Image 1 (tube, rainbow, N blue to C red):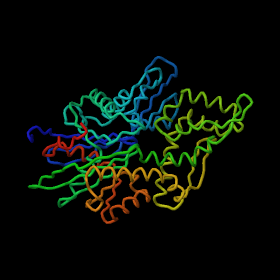
Image 2 (cartoon, one colour):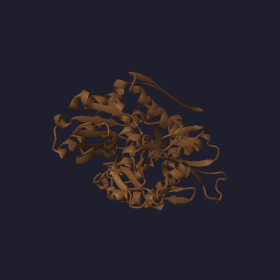
Image 3 (cartoon, one colour):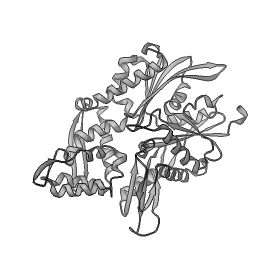
Image 4 (cartoon, rainbow, N blue to C red):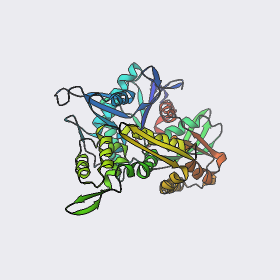
Amino acid sequence: MPSDKPAVSIGIDFGTSNTVVALASADNAVRTLCFRHDGLDHDVYASALCFWQDRPGSSVPASIEGGPWALEQMREGLTALRFIQSFKTFAASRSFQQTTIFRQRYRFEDLLATFLRTLVRHAGPDLDLGSARVHIGRPVRFAGGNPDDALAMQRYGEAFGRLGAKAPRYIYEPVGAAFSFARQIDRDATVLVADFGGGTSDFSVMRFSRRGGTLRAEPLGHAGIGVAGDTFDARIVDHVVAPRLGKGGLYRSFGKVLPVPVHYYGTLARWNELALMKGSADLRELHELARAAIEPGPLEDFIALVENDLGFALYRAVSAAKVGLSREEAVEFRFADGALELASTIRRTDFEAWIAEDLARLDRTVDQVLTQAGLEPADIERVFLTGGTSFVPAVQRLFAARFGEARLTAADQFESIAQGLALIGHAENPDQWAMAA
Protein backbone atom coordinates (compact mmCIF):
# COMPACT_ATOMS: atom_id res chain seq x y z
CA MET A 1 0.00 0.00 0.00
CA PRO A 2 1.25 3.55 -0.64
CA SER A 3 1.16 4.34 3.07
CA ASP A 4 3.57 1.47 3.69
CA LYS A 5 6.25 2.96 1.49
CA PRO A 6 9.47 3.77 3.35
CA ALA A 7 10.90 7.28 3.22
CA VAL A 8 14.04 5.84 1.60
CA SER A 9 14.30 2.83 -0.69
CA ILE A 10 17.72 1.22 -1.19
CA GLY A 11 18.85 -0.59 -4.32
CA ILE A 12 21.95 -2.80 -4.15
CA ASP A 13 23.56 -4.19 -7.29
CA PHE A 14 26.12 -6.65 -5.90
CA GLY A 15 28.17 -7.41 -9.00
CA THR A 16 31.00 -9.77 -9.82
CA SER A 17 33.44 -6.90 -10.36
CA ASN A 18 31.74 -3.89 -8.76
CA THR A 19 28.90 -3.13 -6.37
CA VAL A 20 26.65 -0.09 -6.72
CA VAL A 21 24.20 1.29 -4.15
CA ALA A 22 21.40 3.75 -4.94
CA LEU A 23 18.98 5.61 -2.68
CA ALA A 24 15.51 6.75 -3.80
CA SER A 25 13.30 9.09 -1.81
CA ALA A 26 9.51 9.04 -1.77
CA ASP A 27 9.36 11.75 -4.47
CA ASN A 28 11.33 9.39 -6.80
CA ALA A 29 14.51 11.42 -6.62
CA VAL A 30 17.31 8.88 -6.92
CA ARG A 31 21.05 9.11 -6.41
CA THR A 32 23.97 6.74 -6.49
CA LEU A 33 25.90 6.49 -3.24
CA CYS A 34 29.49 7.73 -3.51
CA PHE A 35 32.48 6.45 -1.56
CA ARG A 36 35.22 8.96 -0.77
CA HIS A 37 38.67 7.39 -1.14
CA ASP A 38 42.05 9.04 -1.66
CA GLY A 39 40.44 12.40 -2.39
CA LEU A 40 38.09 11.03 -5.07
CA ASP A 41 34.40 10.10 -5.10
CA HIS A 42 33.71 6.59 -6.40
CA ASP A 43 30.18 5.63 -7.47
CA VAL A 44 31.20 1.98 -7.70
CA TYR A 45 32.61 -0.11 -4.84
CA ALA A 46 34.95 -2.84 -6.06
CA SER A 47 33.59 -6.30 -5.14
CA ALA A 48 36.82 -7.28 -3.46
CA LEU A 49 38.15 -8.07 -0.01
CA CYS A 50 41.66 -7.84 1.40
CA PHE A 51 42.73 -9.62 4.60
CA TRP A 52 46.15 -8.91 6.10
CA GLN A 53 48.25 -9.38 9.20
CA ASP A 54 50.95 -6.96 10.31
CA ARG A 55 52.53 -9.82 12.27
CA PRO A 56 52.21 -12.96 10.12
CA GLY A 57 51.48 -16.09 12.12
CA SER A 58 50.21 -14.22 15.17
CA SER A 59 46.91 -14.99 16.86
CA VAL A 60 45.71 -11.42 16.31
CA PRO A 61 42.67 -11.40 13.97
CA ALA A 62 43.37 -10.24 10.44
CA SER A 63 42.55 -6.70 9.39
CA ILE A 64 39.93 -6.54 6.65
CA GLU A 65 39.03 -3.99 3.99
CA GLY A 66 36.74 -3.93 0.98
CA GLY A 67 36.22 -1.89 -2.17
CA PRO A 68 38.90 0.66 -3.12
CA TRP A 69 40.43 0.31 0.34
CA ALA A 70 41.03 -3.40 -0.37
CA LEU A 71 42.69 -2.49 -3.68
CA GLU A 72 44.88 0.05 -1.91
CA GLN A 73 46.06 -2.48 0.65
CA MET A 74 46.67 -5.10 -2.03
CA ARG A 75 48.75 -2.69 -4.12
CA GLU A 76 50.87 -1.71 -1.13
CA GLY A 77 51.51 -5.38 -0.38
CA LEU A 78 53.64 -4.55 2.65
CA THR A 79 52.42 -7.43 4.82
CA ALA A 80 51.12 -10.98 4.48
CA LEU A 81 47.72 -10.69 2.80
CA ARG A 82 44.93 -12.50 1.00
CA PHE A 83 43.08 -10.67 -1.76
CA ILE A 84 39.67 -12.02 -2.82
CA GLN A 85 37.84 -10.85 -5.95
CA SER A 86 34.90 -12.04 -8.09
CA PHE A 87 33.62 -14.17 -5.20
CA LYS A 88 30.00 -13.68 -6.33
CA THR A 89 30.65 -16.49 -8.82
CA PHE A 90 30.72 -18.94 -5.87
CA ALA A 91 27.22 -17.97 -4.66
CA ALA A 92 25.37 -20.89 -6.27
CA SER A 93 28.19 -23.43 -6.10
CA ARG A 94 27.69 -26.42 -3.80
CA SER A 95 31.33 -27.40 -4.37
CA PHE A 96 32.45 -24.19 -2.65
CA GLN A 97 31.94 -24.83 1.03
CA GLN A 98 34.59 -22.64 2.62
CA THR A 99 38.06 -21.17 2.36
CA THR A 100 40.59 -20.61 5.14
CA ILE A 101 42.12 -17.16 5.51
CA PHE A 102 44.70 -16.71 8.25
CA ARG A 103 43.32 -19.74 10.15
CA GLN A 104 39.76 -18.39 9.98
CA ARG A 105 37.19 -20.33 7.95
CA TYR A 106 34.88 -18.40 5.66
CA ARG A 107 31.80 -19.73 3.89
CA PHE A 108 30.33 -17.75 1.02
CA GLU A 109 27.82 -16.05 3.31
CA ASP A 110 30.68 -15.09 5.65
CA LEU A 111 32.60 -13.50 2.77
CA LEU A 112 29.52 -11.62 1.58
CA ALA A 113 28.59 -10.40 5.08
CA THR A 114 32.19 -9.32 5.67
CA PHE A 115 32.19 -7.43 2.37
CA LEU A 116 28.86 -5.75 3.16
CA ARG A 117 30.14 -4.62 6.56
CA THR A 118 33.01 -2.78 4.89
CA LEU A 119 30.59 -1.21 2.41
CA VAL A 120 28.18 -0.04 5.13
CA ARG A 121 31.05 1.29 7.25
CA HIS A 122 32.43 3.40 4.42
CA ALA A 123 28.95 4.53 3.30
CA GLY A 124 28.25 6.08 6.69
CA PRO A 125 24.78 6.95 8.07
CA ASP A 126 23.21 7.21 4.59
CA LEU A 127 23.14 3.41 4.33
CA ASP A 128 21.02 1.87 7.08
CA LEU A 129 19.81 -1.53 5.89
CA GLY A 130 17.68 -1.99 8.98
CA SER A 131 15.46 1.05 8.59
CA ALA A 132 14.79 1.18 4.83
CA ARG A 133 13.20 -1.19 2.36
CA VAL A 134 16.05 -2.97 0.59
CA HIS A 135 15.95 -4.20 -3.02
CA ILE A 136 18.76 -6.54 -4.03
CA GLY A 137 19.63 -7.50 -7.57
CA ARG A 138 20.24 -11.12 -8.51
CA PRO A 139 21.12 -12.70 -11.86
CA VAL A 140 18.51 -14.62 -13.81
CA ARG A 141 20.99 -17.48 -13.85
CA PHE A 142 23.87 -17.61 -11.40
CA ALA A 143 27.38 -18.33 -12.65
CA GLY A 144 28.78 -21.84 -12.63
CA GLY A 145 28.37 -25.14 -14.43
CA ASN A 146 25.47 -26.37 -12.31
CA PRO A 147 24.26 -23.39 -10.26
CA ASP A 148 21.93 -23.98 -7.34
CA ASP A 149 19.64 -20.94 -7.20
CA ALA A 150 18.03 -21.95 -3.91
CA LEU A 151 21.43 -22.25 -2.25
CA ALA A 152 22.51 -18.86 -3.59
CA MET A 153 19.39 -17.17 -2.29
CA GLN A 154 19.79 -18.86 1.09
CA ARG A 155 23.35 -17.53 1.26
CA TYR A 156 22.28 -14.04 0.19
CA GLY A 157 19.51 -14.04 2.78
CA GLU A 158 21.83 -15.01 5.62
CA ALA A 159 24.49 -12.44 4.68
CA PHE A 160 22.11 -9.50 4.20
CA GLY A 161 20.20 -10.54 7.31
CA ARG A 162 23.33 -10.15 9.41
CA LEU A 163 23.46 -6.51 8.28
CA GLY A 164 19.88 -5.95 9.45
CA ALA A 165 18.01 -6.12 6.13
CA LYS A 166 14.43 -7.12 6.94
CA ALA A 167 12.46 -9.02 4.26
CA PRO A 168 14.41 -7.56 1.32
CA ARG A 169 13.03 -7.94 -2.18
CA TYR A 170 15.22 -9.90 -4.61
CA ILE A 171 14.78 -8.71 -8.17
CA TYR A 172 16.33 -9.88 -11.42
CA GLU A 173 19.14 -7.53 -12.37
CA PRO A 174 17.83 -6.87 -15.91
CA VAL A 175 14.44 -6.00 -14.39
CA GLY A 176 16.15 -3.31 -12.31
CA ALA A 177 17.81 -2.01 -15.48
CA ALA A 178 14.45 -2.20 -17.28
CA PHE A 179 12.72 -0.10 -14.62
CA SER A 180 15.44 2.53 -14.89
CA PHE A 181 15.26 2.52 -18.69
CA ALA A 182 11.44 2.57 -18.77
CA ARG A 183 11.35 6.09 -17.35
CA GLN A 184 12.58 7.24 -20.78
CA ILE A 185 9.68 5.57 -22.62
CA ASP A 186 6.81 7.90 -23.54
CA ARG A 187 4.48 5.26 -24.99
CA ASP A 188 3.60 1.60 -24.52
CA ALA A 189 6.44 -0.65 -25.64
CA THR A 190 7.75 -4.21 -25.52
CA VAL A 191 11.39 -4.06 -24.47
CA LEU A 192 14.22 -6.59 -24.38
CA VAL A 193 16.78 -5.73 -21.71
CA ALA A 194 20.20 -7.38 -22.02
CA ASP A 195 22.39 -6.96 -18.95
CA PHE A 196 26.01 -8.02 -19.46
CA GLY A 197 27.77 -8.34 -16.12
CA GLY A 198 31.11 -9.79 -15.13
CA GLY A 199 29.93 -13.33 -14.40
CA THR A 200 26.54 -13.64 -16.13
CA SER A 201 24.50 -12.20 -18.99
CA ASP A 202 20.79 -11.84 -18.26
CA PHE A 203 17.86 -11.09 -20.56
CA SER A 204 14.34 -9.95 -19.76
CA VAL A 205 11.40 -9.11 -22.01
CA MET A 206 9.03 -6.60 -20.46
CA ARG A 207 5.80 -4.98 -21.66
CA PHE A 208 5.61 -1.40 -20.37
CA SER A 209 2.53 0.77 -20.31
CA ARG A 210 1.40 3.95 -18.59
CA ARG A 211 -2.04 4.40 -17.12
CA GLY A 212 -2.89 7.67 -15.41
CA GLY A 213 0.80 8.58 -15.27
CA THR A 214 1.70 5.33 -13.48
CA LEU A 215 4.28 3.01 -15.02
CA ARG A 216 3.08 -0.55 -15.26
CA ALA A 217 5.06 -3.58 -16.36
CA GLU A 218 4.24 -7.10 -17.39
CA PRO A 219 7.14 -9.57 -17.37
CA LEU A 220 7.00 -11.77 -20.45
CA GLY A 221 10.19 -13.79 -20.17
CA HIS A 222 13.58 -14.14 -18.47
CA ALA A 223 16.73 -16.09 -19.39
CA GLY A 224 20.35 -16.03 -18.32
CA ILE A 225 23.70 -17.67 -18.97
CA GLY A 226 27.10 -17.79 -17.30
CA VAL A 227 28.82 -16.08 -20.23
CA ALA A 228 29.85 -12.46 -19.73
CA GLY A 229 32.79 -10.11 -19.40
CA ASP A 230 34.93 -12.50 -17.38
CA THR A 231 34.40 -15.19 -20.02
CA PHE A 232 35.76 -12.90 -22.73
CA ASP A 233 38.70 -12.04 -20.45
CA ALA A 234 39.35 -15.76 -20.01
CA ARG A 235 39.73 -16.21 -23.79
CA ILE A 236 42.47 -13.58 -23.81
CA VAL A 237 44.16 -15.24 -20.84
CA ASP A 238 43.97 -18.65 -22.50
CA HIS A 239 45.43 -17.54 -25.84
CA VAL A 240 47.83 -14.78 -24.78
CA VAL A 241 48.81 -15.17 -21.12
CA ALA A 242 48.69 -18.90 -20.36
CA PRO A 243 51.23 -19.98 -23.04
CA ARG A 244 53.72 -17.48 -21.59
CA LEU A 245 53.19 -18.99 -18.10
CA GLY A 246 53.89 -22.58 -19.06
CA LYS A 247 50.77 -23.89 -20.80
CA GLY A 248 51.90 -26.36 -23.43
CA GLY A 249 55.22 -26.95 -21.62
CA LEU A 250 56.76 -30.28 -20.66
CA TYR A 251 58.14 -31.89 -17.51
CA ARG A 252 59.93 -35.14 -16.61
CA SER A 253 58.35 -37.79 -14.39
CA PHE A 254 59.73 -41.30 -13.80
CA GLY A 255 61.76 -41.18 -16.98
CA LYS A 256 58.89 -39.92 -19.14
CA VAL A 257 58.35 -36.50 -20.70
CA LEU A 258 54.77 -35.32 -20.08
CA PRO A 259 52.76 -32.18 -20.83
CA VAL A 260 52.09 -29.77 -17.97
CA PRO A 261 48.48 -30.42 -16.81
CA VAL A 262 46.13 -27.81 -18.25
CA HIS A 263 43.72 -27.53 -15.31
CA TYR A 264 46.00 -25.00 -13.59
CA TYR A 265 45.37 -22.65 -16.50
CA GLY A 266 41.61 -22.92 -16.07
CA THR A 267 42.23 -21.46 -12.61
CA LEU A 268 44.45 -18.76 -14.12
CA ALA A 269 41.58 -17.68 -16.37
CA ARG A 270 39.00 -17.57 -13.54
CA TRP A 271 39.75 -14.57 -11.35
CA ASN A 272 37.68 -15.85 -8.43
CA GLU A 273 39.63 -19.12 -8.26
CA LEU A 274 43.01 -17.50 -8.88
CA ALA A 275 42.42 -15.37 -5.79
CA LEU A 276 42.06 -18.55 -3.70
CA MET A 277 45.06 -20.38 -5.20
CA LYS A 278 47.60 -18.90 -2.79
CA GLY A 279 48.47 -21.51 -0.18
CA SER A 280 46.50 -24.23 -2.01
CA ALA A 281 47.51 -27.75 -3.02
CA ASP A 282 47.56 -26.56 -6.65
CA LEU A 283 50.27 -24.03 -5.85
CA ARG A 284 52.36 -26.68 -4.08
CA GLU A 285 51.99 -28.91 -7.14
CA LEU A 286 53.12 -26.06 -9.40
CA HIS A 287 56.31 -25.77 -7.35
CA GLU A 288 56.97 -29.49 -7.89
CA LEU A 289 56.24 -29.20 -11.62
CA ALA A 290 58.61 -26.25 -11.95
CA ARG A 291 61.42 -28.32 -10.43
CA ALA A 292 60.76 -31.07 -12.97
CA ALA A 293 60.03 -28.84 -15.97
CA ILE A 294 62.21 -28.87 -19.04
CA GLU A 295 61.80 -25.06 -19.12
CA PRO A 296 61.05 -24.02 -15.52
CA GLY A 297 61.01 -20.25 -16.15
CA PRO A 298 57.38 -19.90 -17.32
CA LEU A 299 56.05 -21.99 -14.42
CA GLU A 300 58.15 -19.98 -11.98
CA ASP A 301 56.54 -16.84 -13.40
CA PHE A 302 53.10 -18.40 -12.85
CA ILE A 303 54.04 -19.13 -9.24
CA ALA A 304 55.32 -15.58 -8.75
CA LEU A 305 52.06 -14.21 -10.15
CA VAL A 306 50.10 -16.09 -7.47
CA GLU A 307 52.47 -15.62 -4.54
CA ASN A 308 52.89 -11.89 -5.18
CA ASP A 309 49.12 -11.33 -5.51
CA LEU A 310 49.40 -10.02 -9.06
CA GLY A 311 46.12 -11.52 -10.22
CA PHE A 312 44.15 -8.29 -9.92
CA ALA A 313 46.79 -6.28 -11.80
CA LEU A 314 46.73 -8.93 -14.54
CA TYR A 315 42.92 -8.80 -14.60
CA ARG A 316 43.02 -5.05 -15.14
CA ALA A 317 45.55 -5.37 -17.98
CA VAL A 318 43.48 -8.05 -19.71
CA SER A 319 40.26 -6.08 -19.24
CA ALA A 320 41.91 -2.94 -20.64
CA ALA A 321 42.96 -4.89 -23.73
CA LYS A 322 39.39 -6.12 -24.20
CA VAL A 323 38.04 -2.58 -23.90
CA GLY A 324 40.65 -1.37 -26.37
CA LEU A 325 39.51 -3.94 -28.91
CA SER A 326 36.06 -2.34 -28.85
CA ARG A 327 37.65 0.80 -30.30
CA GLU A 328 40.64 -0.45 -32.27
CA GLU A 329 41.36 -3.24 -34.74
CA ALA A 330 44.43 -4.25 -32.72
CA VAL A 331 45.89 -3.45 -29.29
CA GLU A 332 49.26 -3.94 -27.64
CA PHE A 333 48.80 -6.01 -24.51
CA ARG A 334 51.48 -5.54 -21.88
CA PHE A 335 51.73 -6.61 -18.27
CA ALA A 336 54.91 -6.04 -16.27
CA ASP A 337 55.77 -6.40 -12.60
CA GLY A 338 59.35 -6.88 -11.52
CA ALA A 339 60.94 -9.65 -13.56
CA LEU A 340 57.58 -10.78 -14.93
CA GLU A 341 56.74 -9.23 -18.28
CA LEU A 342 54.08 -10.27 -20.79
CA ALA A 343 53.60 -8.57 -24.14
CA SER A 344 51.64 -9.39 -27.28
CA THR A 345 49.69 -7.80 -30.11
CA ILE A 346 46.01 -8.81 -30.01
CA ARG A 347 43.94 -8.37 -33.15
CA ARG A 348 40.18 -7.95 -33.03
CA THR A 349 39.71 -10.65 -35.69
CA ASP A 350 41.56 -13.15 -33.47
CA PHE A 351 39.62 -12.09 -30.37
CA GLU A 352 36.32 -12.53 -32.19
CA ALA A 353 37.38 -16.01 -33.28
CA TRP A 354 38.22 -16.89 -29.67
CA ILE A 355 34.77 -15.78 -28.42
CA ALA A 356 32.75 -17.20 -31.35
CA GLU A 357 31.28 -20.08 -29.35
CA ASP A 358 30.48 -17.75 -26.45
CA LEU A 359 28.59 -15.49 -28.84
CA ALA A 360 26.67 -18.49 -30.16
CA ARG A 361 25.65 -19.39 -26.61
CA LEU A 362 24.48 -15.80 -26.01
CA ASP A 363 22.47 -15.99 -29.23
CA ARG A 364 20.79 -19.21 -28.12
CA THR A 365 19.90 -17.60 -24.78
CA VAL A 366 18.19 -14.74 -26.63
CA ASP A 367 16.22 -17.45 -28.47
CA GLN A 368 15.17 -18.85 -25.09
CA VAL A 369 13.86 -15.56 -23.74
CA LEU A 370 11.93 -14.82 -26.95
CA THR A 371 10.42 -18.32 -26.94
CA GLN A 372 9.42 -17.95 -23.28
CA ALA A 373 7.79 -14.60 -24.10
CA GLY A 374 6.05 -16.07 -27.16
CA LEU A 375 7.48 -13.36 -29.39
CA GLU A 376 9.45 -12.96 -32.59
CA PRO A 377 12.30 -10.44 -33.01
CA ALA A 378 9.92 -8.18 -34.97
CA ASP A 379 7.69 -7.92 -31.87
CA ILE A 380 10.47 -6.26 -29.85
CA GLU A 381 10.20 -2.48 -30.18
CA ARG A 382 13.24 -1.46 -28.12
CA VAL A 383 16.42 -3.26 -27.08
CA PHE A 384 18.32 -1.88 -24.10
CA LEU A 385 21.89 -3.15 -23.76
CA THR A 386 23.72 -2.40 -20.54
CA GLY A 387 27.14 -3.33 -19.18
CA GLY A 388 30.61 -2.91 -20.65
CA THR A 389 30.45 -6.08 -22.75
CA SER A 390 27.52 -4.60 -24.68
CA PHE A 391 30.08 -2.38 -26.43
CA VAL A 392 32.05 -5.31 -27.85
CA PRO A 393 31.50 -4.91 -31.63
CA ALA A 394 30.68 -8.59 -32.14
CA VAL A 395 27.96 -8.36 -29.45
CA GLN A 396 26.56 -5.23 -31.06
CA ARG A 397 26.43 -7.00 -34.44
CA LEU A 398 24.63 -9.99 -32.90
CA PHE A 399 21.76 -7.79 -31.68
CA ALA A 400 21.73 -5.52 -34.73
CA ALA A 401 21.35 -8.56 -36.99
CA ARG A 402 18.36 -9.78 -34.97
CA PHE A 403 16.53 -6.57 -34.15
CA GLY A 404 17.91 -3.86 -36.42
CA GLU A 405 20.39 -1.23 -35.33
CA ALA A 406 17.73 1.48 -35.00
CA ARG A 407 16.07 -0.36 -32.10
CA LEU A 408 19.27 -0.67 -30.04
CA THR A 409 20.14 1.55 -27.10
CA ALA A 410 23.37 0.87 -25.25
CA ALA A 411 24.54 2.31 -21.94
CA ASP A 412 27.63 1.47 -19.94
CA GLN A 413 25.97 2.93 -16.87
CA PHE A 414 27.05 1.11 -13.74
CA GLU A 415 24.27 2.77 -11.80
CA SER A 416 21.27 1.84 -13.99
CA ILE A 417 20.51 -1.43 -12.19
CA ALA A 418 20.97 -0.06 -8.66
CA GLN A 419 18.90 3.04 -9.42
CA GLY A 420 16.12 0.96 -10.95
CA LEU A 421 16.11 -1.33 -7.91
CA ALA A 422 15.83 1.65 -5.55
CA LEU A 423 13.01 3.23 -7.55
CA ILE A 424 11.02 -0.02 -7.52
CA GLY A 425 10.57 0.53 -3.78
CA HIS A 426 8.33 3.50 -4.59
CA ALA A 427 6.43 1.86 -7.43
CA GLU A 428 2.66 1.42 -7.10
CA ASN A 429 3.05 -2.34 -6.56
CA PRO A 430 6.71 -3.14 -5.81
CA ASP A 431 6.03 -6.84 -5.34
CA GLN A 432 5.12 -7.29 -9.00
CA TRP A 433 8.79 -6.68 -9.83
CA ALA A 434 10.16 -9.09 -7.22
CA MET A 435 9.71 -12.22 -9.29
CA ALA A 436 12.86 -13.82 -7.92
CA ALA A 437 11.96 -13.59 -4.26
